[in-house]
Length: 143
Picture 1 (cartoon, rainbow, N blue to C red):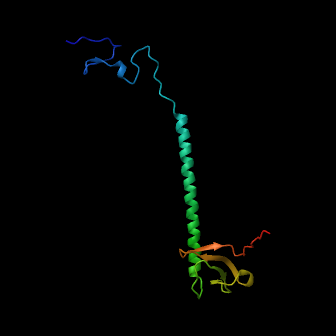
Picture 2 (picture 1 turned 180 degrees about the horizontal axis):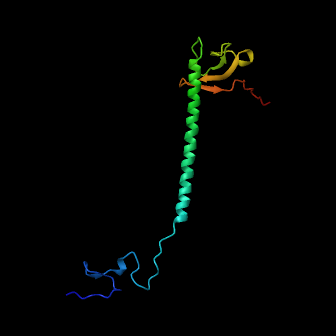
Picture 3 (picture 1 turned 90 degrees about the vertical axis):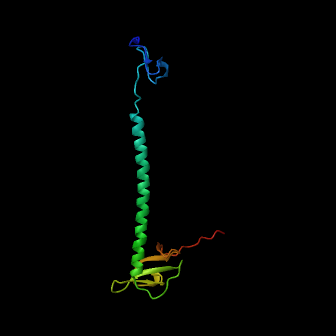
């Protein structure tokens, strides 16, 4: 018959040794109280940071999506318009509505045309139409 150890003694019967020094927790009444760390504020802080990061990424993706939808809208509008020439990459063209409210593409500047101007566009090397400012940029010369 094995000798019974007192309740306050930590003894491993399988290894037949005292193992209080090897345990990750206190084993005596005089040991400090075990308290779980309060990581609620850390969790809240991390949740806030993660949500802010994800919202920022979402807003960037949303802005990119909206920009792509604008490009798609421009391309559909210009492709459906009437024009009898082959547009050249990098050149600026102007979109107008004719008297019957049908869109057409032209090389004529808006300041010399009486039709309703819908916008000015440039054909990119990707064969996508991008909207540009129709007003000519003045170049400032420094003397």
